[in-house]
Image 1 (cartoon, rainbow, N blue to C red):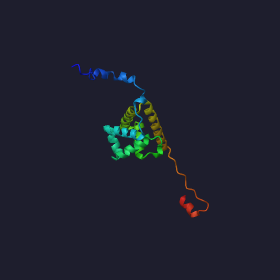
Image 2 (cartoon, rainbow, N blue to C red):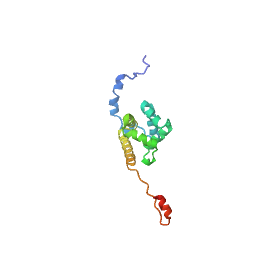
Image 3 (tube, rainbow, N blue to C red):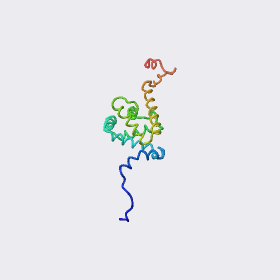
Image 4 (cartoon, rainbow, N blue to C red):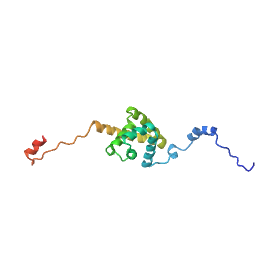
Length: 167
């Protein structure tokens, strides 16, 4: 009996101390590995697939092409992406992430924020949400104030017949 090590199994009392232990742990960024855009997109994609309502909504708006959903999420998270680079599906996902319109937006936005905070931590997730919010505002401005194409001009060399057709 004396040959056995003096270790004791983990007890629930030890688990109750986890919040206390975590409060003395390394800063937030030191606990989380740095994720690439593709890895972050995949993890968000997996979280969306795991949520029953979000999964149904994204299945519907993507016409069950989940590879397109993952690519759209990847584009949304990529810092080099502008509003003009987003597909219609990507634009729709951005709206769900930000706008809180309808039941789906009211479910997806807070869920997305919690997922981001768990994956990135509060500071990085807040920074990313601000960038996605700005992208959404750009999309809204584009919809409200579409750029009109310039009217076709007629060169002086064109015939009167061509001018009458344009008018």
